[in-house]
Image (cartoon, rainbow, N blue to C red; front, side):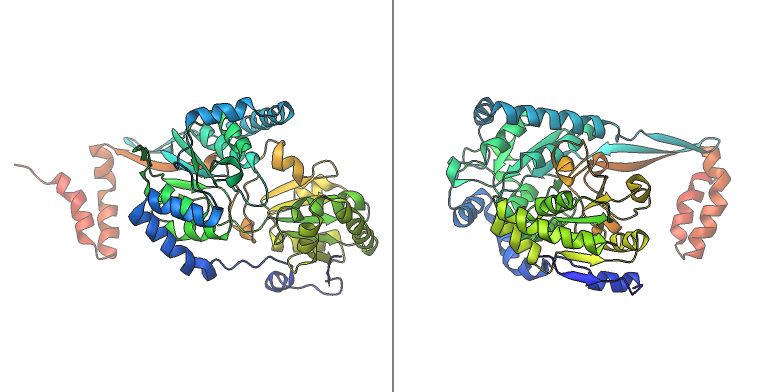
Length: 440
């Protein structure tokens, strides 16, 4: 079922690997011309434009953008007990992990009388996006809200598409998750118009003010991604998320049932999802193909899964050794990377590029999606080579506080003047020397 790329007789360079490895192709630039007018319309017409686009794209016109508070309580009260228990456990584990990520302020004594303090200050207000579309993602509400709260963000708004099935409100499980997390502001809007109204704010249909945010986080479709790109600078963003992806580095000792199940689990998200197996065992690759045929036929979303697995973004990469496999997965820089090899912990310790690494047979990506305690909002499209997943750090800004006495400044004044003159910026130096002129 998976196409194969055979690298056993070659040692390609990193550039060559990036060219030949399976990868989903998403051209955000190609939709910018469609998204720009939406963003501009929301900027000029506010909520009226948002409701027009929601009716056009989602087939329903909500009474308001903001979901009434009592609807969050009703959604939580109506939540199935097993789902509530699972969400509570997911929240508890995520809070445990993210609490340890909070940074402390640090003061460095540079010289006597001169200090630099790095203060970590949370973003004031954040918009957290929970996608709609092919699935419902209360887990994404958890993954966005928990680190923001741990960082100390004071004002949060969860945004999720309006659903015709639920009277123009987001899915009740989304509302229930927000209520469980103590978030009382939820907006029923998705796509590019969601990013725009979050960035610009507006006045809701009842006259209440929808305050703009300073940052937007959370994955969505290509139109949300394009809008985030257009608005970046006015607001901060976490990343430009593409289709989800999994890479599995496995040797001949891996269980093909497990490997196939994990590849399918990510293919279930989207026909564009990428599922990549990297192995030094042809026997395992063959066995996984057999298992994929069997398991795909038994899974609920078999057509979607089959489309993803047959797409050019998915495939099996044959390598000569686990060491070569490491080269491949480091070049690929997967959103999710599973290590199913002998000495999986040792191999995982050598991974440099991945959004998250899952070690051994009993740490599937699905665990991280829900209940590992880790965050599942991760870099895609190879961005794990230079970027991290969502964390407490995402919502913090480092501010340097410079505190020098007169004597401390006097001591270094000549150096400041020398560098200012070297850069032909004499007024910079004069801003220092002016402090030491005889005032008569």
